[in-house]
Image 1 (cartoon, rainbow, N blue to C red):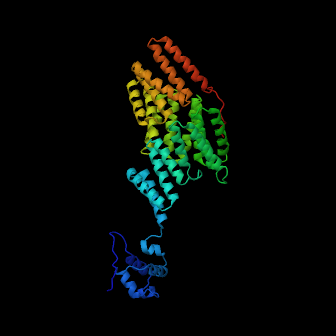
Image 2: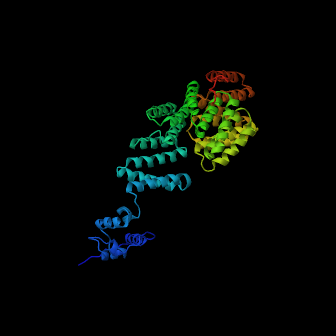
Image 3: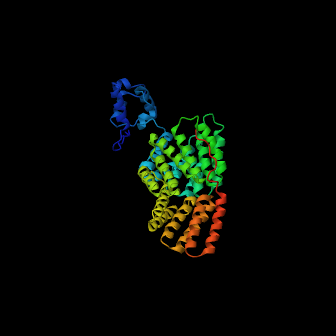
Length: 447
């Protein structure tokens, strides 16, 4: 008995036989012209009609005659299984940014497991890194750190190639109050980059990130020294983004040192450069930084304008932390406008969004809540909010903000007629002020 295998056609897909016929006709060849020993023109006729499935030997001979690879003839693509998986991971990464995040994450989980089972650790790690970035964007920093560590166990990415990964992991450490881990991470990256001939530009990026981590940890002098090194490198670098990052970090550091006018000048320089780059996400964050500075100098109306610009630019690209920062600054604007109820409501939204993560932002949010409640003369609730805010800001070495919140708390208690408690709080505020750098501390010269 002779068994004839009939090729099955999948809806919308070209069969092997159809592909052979199409390629042959495109090249102007007859079935006889394509035939070779072991692959007769009659055999080719049956393949094209879908009545025979070609053997691997026949596929190789036909592919050679038609000028394609055997893989293309069989599947319609030259991609290997590894290449195909890499393409699917790239598609899922794009979907995370622009499409169905839930579906993309499920696909990445599946692809990570498939790659690991196939021994393709590079692809498995890439899929895990994409998942970690997605988890962090939702504000789930502890889960994100665990996901990054799982990916690193498969294959640790180069700090030269994946700055986004190390920057996000560092920010997650910061959100969890693990400043020592964040600082150590950036130092390791810098050590690795010093051994690479083309790592100079990336070193500048990591020095800027390190300056953020050091300033958050209260090491403002060291942060300034690191920034000075970054400035010297940037003077030789024509990349406008690098200059933006340096101006941005200088604005942030100046504001933490209490030099708000200088901070605002640096922020405006960053914004001017960003306008030329059309980078909407970083422009939005620069406007958010400017709002923070303007609120600190009492310019609530100016801060509102900056926040409106930031919100327009963010669109759907804001992370959970970006949203929380926006709410904190909106609350501070409401306080400056005398709207206590509005300030308190927005601050609560920020606190709810943050959960227990990102202590520095959370401390500022509680301080904003205290100010909003104080405007409503809700003394006990305001005190509880100030107490929580000052403790968090002190723990995270945000000395200037802790000092300001403690002063506001002292004023609230004094107005309630509790003079001795107010004096005790002013003593605590004075101790916090001793940790803060002088308002006219020296700063690196901008090139």
